[in-house]
Image 1 (cartoon, rainbow, N blue to C red):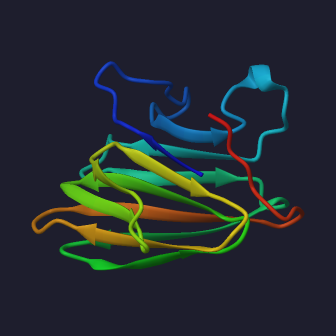
Image 2 (cartoon, rainbow, N blue to C red):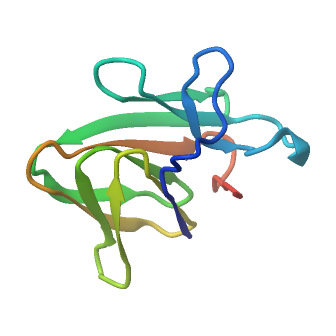
Length: 149
């Protein structure tokens, strides 16, 4: 499953402590009643936008990589893992390696990919000042991570 969330000029939910935009969280609202596991935020207050991850390390393992320039390559998502791709500048193309779908990301967009089967994702950054942050989340105590918007 994948989901693209476009940057919204009207704003969205922000973290009270930092003013950063909350891009995605699990659970996504307190009304769900589920225990908190992780939150991804976009902080645009500094000279460059940064993506910040808060996660309960007892349940979630994570890695974060920033890609810039004209990078083109593949991202590997293991079974049960989630990839969170956040546009920081310019444009980037995220696509299934086998080609059934592709989406362009711009600054502030977030693209989330999850599933029970391993998946290869193609990432291509446009020339210029394109930049994305890719966060991989992996379950420590379960087989699969789920994120319900």
